Image (cartoon, rainbow, N blue to C red; front, side):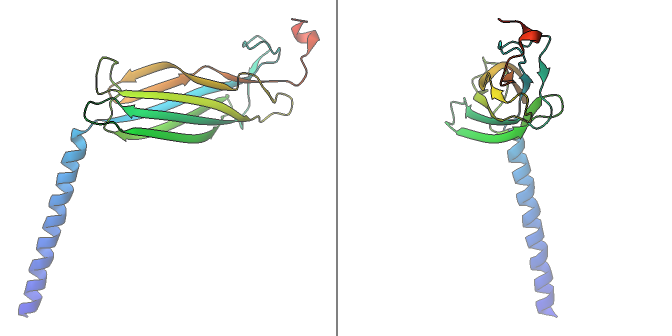
Amino acid sequence: MKKMLMLVDMEKKLIMLMLLLQLLSLGQSSSKPTANITVMGLVYCDVCSNNNFSKHSYFMPAGVEVRIICRFKAASSKTREMITFSANRTTNELGLYKLDITSVEGASCATEANKDSLVASCQASLIGSSSDSCNVPGHKTTTDQVKSKRSNLCVYRFTALNFRPFKKNIDLCGKQ
């Protein structure tokens, strides 16, 4: 009976220790900033092969494959951490590809003046077309252009990537 009471007492102490450790870890994680990062872009068919979105161009249907590579560096004086992230994404029915990276601990997306804000460089490249009629790469690589930053959200938007038809339709586009 005495052994059983000792085991119950020890079990209670162990549970209390685990709860204390969990509380301490929750307190620690809330003191560090975390950044949520979204990287996105569009892919279109450049029907007239002029590297512009013209009245004959259209956003590629779902299924275009795009490779995204991002390098994030915490610009803190306390750390020199570098994270490289690479992922393939497929466009949706509107020609949009998107990558969400949640909870990059130790980084903030605040203004450029903030010395602890995130420094990033991202690039997107075409892998393959979803269309037989528009599958020759035009603009096949792009880097991030517009950055929207708030305290815990970074949005990186790419200039559009495009494919072209194998042969230009002169009746539709002229001889340009």
